[in-house]
Image 1 (tube, rainbow, N blue to C red):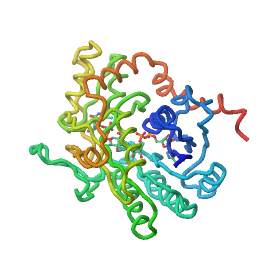
Image 2: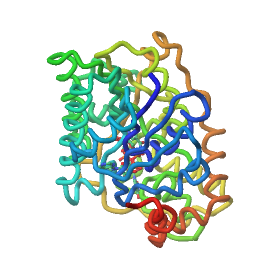
Image 3: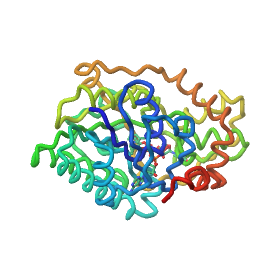
Image 4: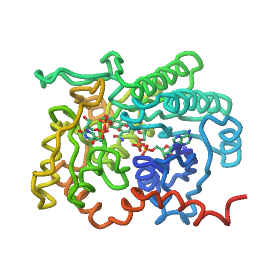
Length: 341
Ligand code: NAD
Ligand code: DAU
């Protein structure tokens, strides 16, 4: 493994992963990203001139562009992060989710097959398993839990996940699948719970909590997801699925209250709003397979990770303010215009 094609590398987890790889391995990284609303090259401004890094603006659904990039860069491995990732948006319109998450993955799989790549890692999600009962904390998602996705987003991810399985079984493609729980950390788009609440709390705005606030998510610091993906890439068994999670369940309302406490803000602005349709009640990941078989363990405990994250959003206010104003969308043209042919 030498030349990694990282799709969706301008998004939240993808951009953290690109840096993680440059800092912790000797691999070259080709970041292949369409730059949808969720793609922000400013996330990578500190490494954009690294000689082991290259950016290609393209769509994973475009087979010619994928092939050209594989050929020109002698790619041997694909790590597929590219996706429409926000559940609320998938409820408003599912089309883009099916196009990118399902068809895009199929295009990448076909190209991996044609070029006989050494590895194809699909970054899937715990949401493919559906929802857990909230009253029995001993039940968690294992790799054997049947897929029972409930939102258009998670169903499109489940479709992609199963296509990957099919290419392993039918074509013997060296496929690996990771299913991770909710990530948090720097560069997360402020439409997701934690960065949205931090931004609103700093600005003294109302904090919209869906339903009764008692939905449970299992939070993992983004660098720990990155180290888990690298462990699977380097040591995972082809055809296998690996859950990744931090054993760190929280009610949404408690996360919101913790953020307010750490920012020294009162709770008056917490506002219960209409629930998300089809809202999954609880996610919880059993990570014993990746821990026992690959020796992976999360490095960050939640109290440290959340403080680090809040500090990052405080120190990088202009990053999320530019996202909220839409100014971030000009970054590519401004900084890459000389490289656009
Ligand atoms: P994100 O929305 O922040 O980033 C997605 C990236 O994909 C963006 O840079 C976007 O421009 C790019 N992209 C979208 N469509 C594309 C296309 N057709 N071609 C090329 N690039 C395209 O997402 P994220 O939160 O960083 O999640 C990354 C991956 O991890 C997704 O596959 C998601 O399903 C999975 N995942 C996310 C979480 C989480 O908590 N955020 C947890 C588990 C798994
Ligand atoms: O579990 C992994 C998944 O986590 C990933 O696959 C998805 O890409 C990622 O977006 C995330 O999905 P969630 O729906 O869990 O994340 P989100 O941040 O949108 O919401 C977290 C919880 O907070 C959820 O129960 C809904 C709730 N919520 C969210 C928002 C944006 C609120 O109560 N208020 C809000 O304003």
